[in-house]
Image (cartoon, rainbow, N blue to C red; front, side, top):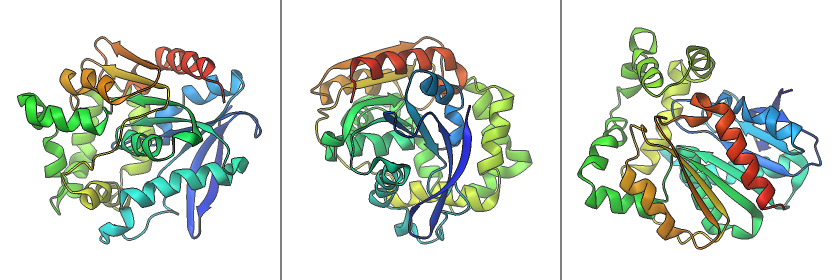
Length: 285
């Protein structure tokens, strides 16, 4: 059963968090990306709890109404602050500086790669959904003519009117993208309940605006890694996905889900849970 909590992980920042499992069980922190919310992991959290883990999925900075600094100040959404939020969440859940498992999707995946590169000693395992290693992504941006087109939204989201565009006509842009990537309508409604308003959308876009269009380089990953990629992903091409192996110097598994789009946990929840639990059991804390 999923419990909804409000947790002050950082001073003055209160996050909406989905939690499942016993407090002293091995912790699995699950970070969502753009266009969705903590509800991306609604199927995985009960599976984790049943398997003896503590699953924790927060609405991240800007997505939680109580953790929404002014999005016009882009520096308040710098990636280092977002990483600090994630690590503070682990401590707020009572796990201090203990090791934990990390799951990341899309922008949450960007944070997860960076945490794994910077703090490998903190992680028992890394599970990545849809987001290639930044080194593989940057290489694909140079060498794969299709990748720049797939990533054109990074530039479009810098536009001051982007939030209005995304929310126009009852969030038609998001609804269409979700449908094209296999997200069930009920899941889309949950996500729009979080980001389907101007304040939340401006904050979500501040993640892109704080970074700009450049992905900062990180080092080789030394944490056991599972990378799940759907071959119908509209933002990540095969070159970037397959190239990630060159940036992981640890046990590595690349799992391709045929016909699956950018949001695998919503589109194939049972398979994602199965793969995740296999990975966690192979790399206990």
